[in-house]
Length: 458
Image (cartoon, rainbow, N blue to C red; front, top):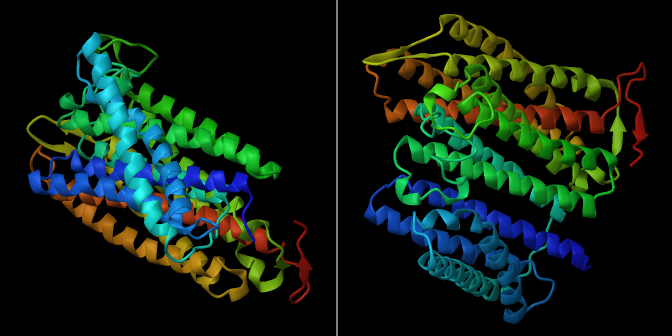
């Protein structure tokens, strides 16, 4: 059975965005200046991302042949190049006048030419190979990609916090007086690079959220998922606003420190709310999937006993994330030594970690023991138990590195461990939300019957 052409167009849009997200992740590492050789390798990897994006599109074509595969690849390249226009303006520097327009034509033309050619070659190779069947509707796939983009945004945000670069760019929504999309790449050095790159990732997340909202409105009929897509888009807007006001304290274009009032409470709210946004888009992705919308049997009895507990776990993990964010952001920098640590936040975070661990183990073990036909709950149970173990290891490593530091200079090992601890916490929260959602989808409230089955109404 062939997929509808409209869903096929949505699939190409999703693959184009996915290719761009991979390219941005590679480019982010390349801009860290890992060295000439590593930089050249990473630069080549960006072209390989286009090739493989086209190859996947070619494999997913409904017909066999290099020509159809190349056409699918061209669509991927076009979408990718269009999204990458977000960063083209930063390549021009401060030039103005006719030279600027010449550079614009060269960069934009080169961007589209390289993207179309690389993706078309990949599509032709894929079109001549085995056919693949897409297991995800376009909306579900794009939901996954949007969640992945937000996850990368959390990674870059964690590095900004870990490197204490949150105020490296003093103004917002501009960057040192430049339009955010036109700030010269040549000036993105040190903490300025990490902070500005984080802002650019926020632009990519915003574009992804808008596109997902359009796709859901076009292809999804469920009231819940359509409402949640709109809420998710509004949450992204609020998150961006909080990030900007965290820097300036109020709406202003001034770069003068006397007119700015950076807000630590908003920094905490910004960090926590970003993880809530990530979990929300993970939920949107599963709501768009075939498994969620398909026919299945809902059960009560023993299998339903985790409904309430899984909901409690979401709240517990959210409170734990808040305590962790307060500990990170309420540290007081010292000019010639390590920061002063807020002991109250540290004790709160460590104490609540024990509560979060117990709740996670209870939910994970209960999820693993429910009937296998209620997947993906058992798989998510395995996943959350693995994540909590990793989270504890990262947390111990981060705590040891933070409290034993003797200088004002931040070791890279500390940045790595604290950032990994943060993003693993985001994965834990998102996984707990997905477990709670699936548990409510597959089970009904516990009744007095030993194990009653009811066909769901979908």
